[in-house]
Length: 218
Image (spheres, rainbow, N blue to C red):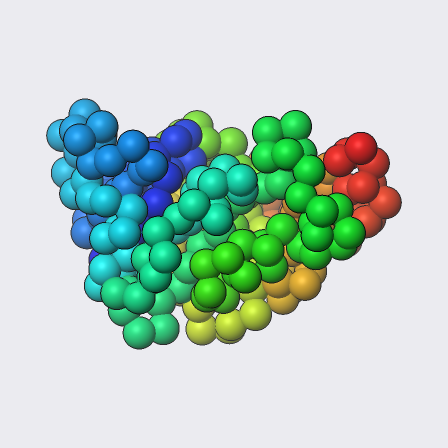
């Protein structure tokens, strides 16, 4: 599968490592240019590209940049993606890092905010995952206690593509609902940072409360 990754920080870098090792054709970009990704490219075999080119031909695109950087992504960067491409949003709103974003403070979900800026539906995944776990904690399907990740999104086909990819990485998934339900996996909720199995993740999602999320932001 052809996969474009925009953002080469902890999550983006480790997804590049694992997905390339699994045999996917990975293009990776960051805000500083492909010349800064030489070491990652040599390590993984991924192709370093400009952010404007990362999605070209990609069936899956991972947007893994700080939320405050989303408006600075190149205009039309998804135009060259494969038809029906699944776009994964790994982002979180951290006011102390991103500054106060009024519409999010007023209740707009952070992934809806990202959708508005990039002009494409997203699937929210990996946003509460420790980056090192992507390298270290993957297990074969059927392994008892296999770590699970919540996945939210509105497009069933795109969501299944993402869930299948996560399974390939060695993790179970729990469907956490449509994107309007993605607040259940935002920072400040019980599932955020959980390393539990599918039952644990489902329970944590059910115990989420908007009030707790608001308290965390404050």
